[in-house]
Image 1 (cartoon, rainbow, N blue to C red):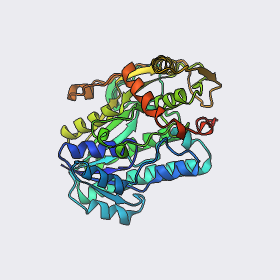
Image 2 (image 1 turned 30 degrees about the vertical axis):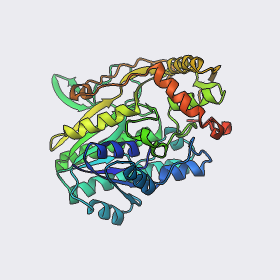
Image 3 (image 1 turned 45 degrees about the vertical axis):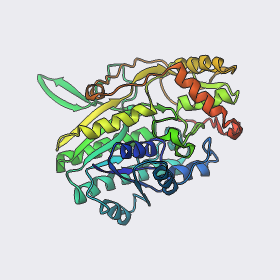
Image 4 (image 1 turned 135 degrees about the vertical axis):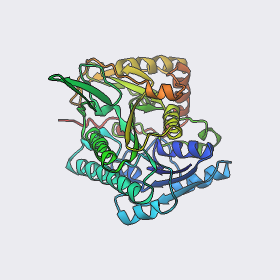
Length: 382
């Protein structure tokens, strides 16, 4: 297939581009380095330096990978969007091109406005681009399990049937996002659902849990092909942060009671889920929703696992419970369903101690790059 990846330079976008190219697809990867620029502006560089997207594509091809075409520009600019969609008759569009951080979205008014304007404008331009240039293309949008919040009932896979006053109908599952970033993802889903009904688009919305990991089958050949690895409070996911804190002898930052429970998955499983969705696309006029995670853990359980893995590599890992800067439930019911991707053939990578040890060993090689003052910013929700 001819595949367009929006946000192709990101933590998920770049590994997805390599994985799909390696599986024989023609890939165009688009980015404007917004994620890199935001991190630089907040003085929170990633653990190791990486080439830009154009250079990454060149290195990938030189090391035996099938070509990936880079395009650099702002997807909020319709003139550039037209250029991108005219590059090929795309069979699928994968939409990662958003400001991806809940804490960043809560920093201040400027960060909030950037999150709203970027995320909603890019999603709208993606929709209009598909309708005008490739109306039969399958749109795969990366959503988030954070759209659901932590309701005191089971979380269905996107949809719920409501019986009311003797009548019944199916609706999008009620969502109660826990940050402004997650709220924009709810709005993405609503925009897509509207245009699925109006224009018969075909869309898969992947409600993904927090991702962890560094290695994929494609990036082991050359360290320059590794994904961005953020370890700071704003852009680092919790497992990646804890791994880096363990190496830096910085107590693992558990917010509040640490009972916050979410669904997690290995970076390699994100790639599987996207590819499986591509190979079995949604029908025309369908908004298909999958809950994309493998296992659920509380923050306390994650901290304990990293602490135990640290012992194997000689690290004395401390855990510290901090006053929670976020406005969230610290103890709650959490039972989300996630059968759709398993039925498509997902072969999960479960969080093993060996995998955590490999991450620790890799981060230790870059320990000299860790700036402790970048780890915790105490960004407050309220």
